[in-house]
Image 1 (cartoon, rainbow over the protein chains, first blue to last red):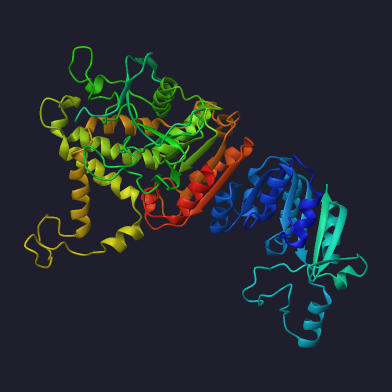
Image 2: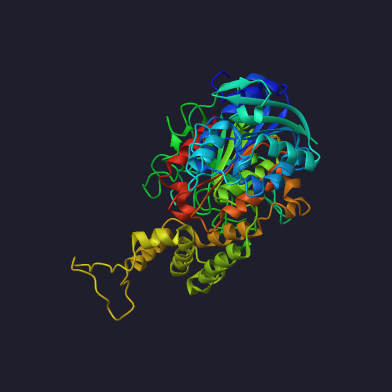
Length: 196
Length: 367
């Protein structure tokens, strides 16, 4: 599992064996494949990109091509022990509704996203006066898929407003775990474990 | 038709959804690859409306390659070095299995005395064949178009029989538009005086009617972009090789007309008009939800198989929305399902043609 992105590696370690997992925006299926092989997890995925779905199916994974904001509605309540949304929240039209759907189909949710309040982002905006292009946000404003930038503090406020319980949180910078203090300044990426 | 088809006579009467039975029904079939000693590597391939059991290798009637030659064979996505592939000719068809051209009790062809059959009846025939061959568990059932309907019907009605279900360019029900196109084809056949109420086997077949049916259907298998790219408004060159010109008559001036006429007349040499009536009827009757109390998810409640559903973005006969409808039901039933809409320019026929992404999905899903 060492090849997994840091947030996915944490998620993989947190997920109990022999459970049911839905990875929303599963990409090439790296997390799902790892969970299936290492923990006998009933691993399902949803991915919008047909080429990536074909790659997942070719790896023997059960992945449905779909748009999370439309197609999560297909799944019954509580169909999964865990629902994962890895660095996809900020691309949603309505992140709040997507979060609600995630916690409808999954009893526990993992959500990770790039933190827009990281000091590099703040500095780029403050001193440069331009939309930041950083290590964590490498794409220019006009072509990025990130349409709803979010900070650690914003996300915690949304969770509070929605009555969602934050079970655990992890922060990352430069591919490494950070201690939690000053996370809204220091974290490039954040990962939350949530439940209703 | 030459009598060289591989045939098995079913030991028991085959019950039909319409109420009757087929006595001593014959199933023509082909197999490819070796069956493992523990019989664990069998894949059932179900053919489409005008397909047959000759999946790969030279077709004994037409001399052309099998209809899925590019998908099935040694080292191919359905790898016959590893899997034992069985493909039956559906009942009602005309490539050896019992159908309207088969003799009745008095020795004359059954013609319209052949009972109306359903997709489930076709699968019942395939299951009876598997029983006779001693194959109790399939590694997979695979089909495109009407073959996909059979694969879904098998999963819904014989749960546990197949471990994997691969349904390509298909639907869980025929739509009004699907039925409408089929009705055009049937009416073209029945309007041909040669059809004669189905009693034409002693004389000339209703080739003109069957050709028109095929022409209309063939349009539904292609995409508008595909037709435009292939033919545009190009004129057909004359027989003497000179450039085409409008004839100010009703010859096949346009290349697309010439192509369709060729498709139509070629089809009549290998297909029986009555079989076309019966099989299109079976497809029109197909509605998997209706068979299961109106809820498609109920059809798959105990299926116990992994599913893979594939659609093509240019297929307007069984468009992606139909596959999504199916995937929705499979998810609601909690079945492990993969779904992908592949981009391909060829319309519904994409499942038969060069689409490398399909090869990867098929090979990966079959494992």
